[in-house]
Amino acid sequence: MPVVPGFLERLAFRANLAPSAILDVHGAASLHAVALADELGVLAALDGPQSVSSLAAGLACEEDALRRLLDALVAVGYADRSGDEYWRTRTTERWLTEGGDANLAPFARFWVDVVLPYWREHAARAVREGDPGASLYEWLGDDEAGWATTQAGFRAAASLLVDPVVDALGDYSGARVLDLGGGHGAYAVELARRGASVTLVDRPPALEPAREAAAEAGVDVRFVGGDYLTDDLWRQLVEPDLDSDFDPDTGPDGAGDADAGYDLVLLFNVLHGHSPAEAATLLDRAAAALAPGGKLAILDQFGRGGSSSLADVGVALIDLTYLITFGGGTLDADSVNRWLGDAGLSAVETKTFRRAPGVKLLRVEAPYPDRN
Image (cartoon, rainbow, N blue to C red; front, side):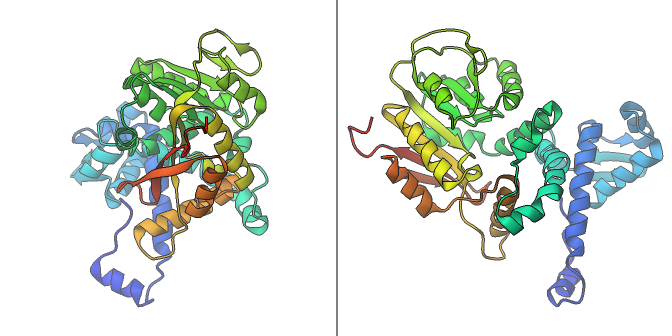
């Protein structure tokens, strides 16, 4: 875990007798150590006490160099040691491996391999001008490895919330669901597993990991590649001619009956990456795609922080990150309600989650019977 100062150290930091900024340096190094350990397979290999020599042989690492990485993991609480043997801690077991509650190691790798390199190139411009010049997604371009790392990171972060969020949505078995910008596929796959008929829309490079996740789960999800702000894509989404995967360059590869709209439209971690005008347009189009009685669900970060609590620190830092990566930011509730009203929609329920401070789920519906 990140470095936790002892009692006397905390007193020294609070009295400004020691440079508390050193903790930020330690935290950055710890993040890189976790990402490296995951990349090399160290975290997965530490499933019981093992000697450095056996680990080094199995992981194809130089023995003394691996020992130094392991000792760093011990220092920050991700591994334990007795003599020459190492094993992962309960923290690592629960939060950084596939068998735990959530595996956030791919999220660490996303930050190290994608976010921070992008940040170094674009942060100064974003703060000076209010816009990074090119979004993170534009920067990724056709980099397949970068997209795979990005979507694996998003999926890892989503793993904290998938079950409670889908539970909160209610029973959508047999319903038609449209997941806009759902690239990593975590929510689409879970809804499909629970019996929904799901169409997932995102940029083509973002879809391959979601296809793999759906295949691994043994569920059917239809994937639509394209920009959900374009008219051509929306015609494909609302017209009765798509019952299978669609590619904007070749058109649909099948035909079917699209009925009269979607019972549920998801906008999960999407609005923060758009300008107010784009967000308003997207909500208006999502509203038009709903079947009579259908609902829209918005999951995103709200607020700007403002106190010294850990939760507010996290929200403030993610707000800065959205500025740098997209020119966006965490959402303002008043702005969202105004956009919803302009689209003929109204939030009827808001849910928060203890595991993700600042994140809110808005369940939205048309307040008037004739909206659709």
